Image (tube, rainbow, N blue to C red; front, side, top):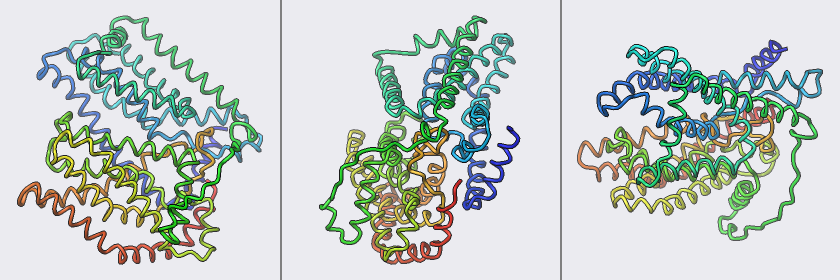
Amino acid sequence: MITHFITLQWKSFWRSASMSSGLFMKLFMGFWALWFIVMMGSGGVGAFFLIEEKLNLDPLVVINELMVYWIVMDLIFRYALQKMPVINIKPLLILPFNKRKIVSFAFGKTIFSFFNIIHAFFFIPFSVVLVQQDYPIANVLLWNIGLIALIYSSNFLNIILNKKDNLIFIIGGVLALCIGLQYFGYFDITKYTAPFFEGLYNIPFLVLIPISLLVFLVIISFRSFVKDLYLDAGLATKAKNVETENLEWLNRFGKTATFLKNDIKLIKRNKRARSTVMVSVLFLFYGLLFFTGAVETYEGPVWRIFAAIFVTGGFLLSFGQFVPSWDSSYYPLMMSQNIRYKEYLSSKWWLMVIATLISTVLASGYLYYGWDVYLAIIVGAIYNIGVNSHVVLWAGAYVKTPIDLTSNKKAFGDKQAFNAKTLLLSLPKMALPMILYAIGHYAYSPYAGYAVVAVAGVAGFAFKNAVFSKIEKIYRTEKYKTIWAYKQKK
């Protein structure tokens, strides 16, 4: 049975309408996965000697103190980026397959998730160094078993939390509060959590606690999904009463207003689109890593423009990456109407521009760190409006992955509004402004660097019509390929 499921998944990948782009993305993601593996491995080896020589502290004690943040941050990143195992649930339910077999195969796929394996590339090298430094091998082994159980507990807890939006935001808020209280010296949560992680090393029987937690979460999540694995239950689409809205204030945009109204209604009414916007708000806080000096690595001048692009472009980089996939369910119908691509693309562009301007205003709190910081944010906004908004629309013509808006938060559906693919597609948009800023900064001054980036943004805005004409031609060329891809059932 399991072999049959694997065969179906293999055929699904190679016969998919988006196979070519999917293969490219897998190769691209493989490169970054390799990079993360190298960084984690080198960090595992270097952490011991860095803590011992620079801080004159016991490395194991320091790691145990920080472990609570490691576990909670891992859970939050899983929620934001990790996709649940995707298999064609509905077609399988009408076939003589045991539901427990289906769930077991889907759960088995999560065991080999990159989000689980990546931790080993830090802790295994770190543990090897511990053994080489005469730490008892039995104690180190028990400590690793406990951590493995906790990491996989996060994996199955994430499966459960994917049905609880509010809960994950509460966890994130509590984490931010604890970090802030510890930073300002009011409350240190590590004093209460570190003894437990130290106990995994010192007390052999304490490892039974995370193992028991893992078993409990596996049972709960397994029973939950078996219970919901019915066409007329857990996988059914819930009906809701929706109030109509005219949004007449958008009529000033002419024919483009029709598409703007559809997008705003989509964001307000659909859980997946709404959660994407909520996640994009978190981009506003990304600049704290760069502008506060909290991370020494990010203190270079070029990193300021990198942070500014993220702070003002959260909506553009998250929601914008799914254009036109947000409309995939009715895209064929829309293309059969007398609709100009320019009007359709203009609506998406205006939506991203408005969101960028709002983000720039909300980011005015960074004035606390000086005018230079906010100047970088303004320049980043100009570049996002003039250049990155066009790049996003251009890239959308080639991303032919449909979005099933009814599958969000359903068993084994494509749950994440913001995933690793979205993040990786945004990385190339960071390189050009950093290069432009570096040219001006190192050739003359920081203000020259900002001027070069701003000029690029203004130039993109000035040549908007010409750029849109090029993008429109690309969409026309890809029109029937896109329609065909959106009709495919994955």
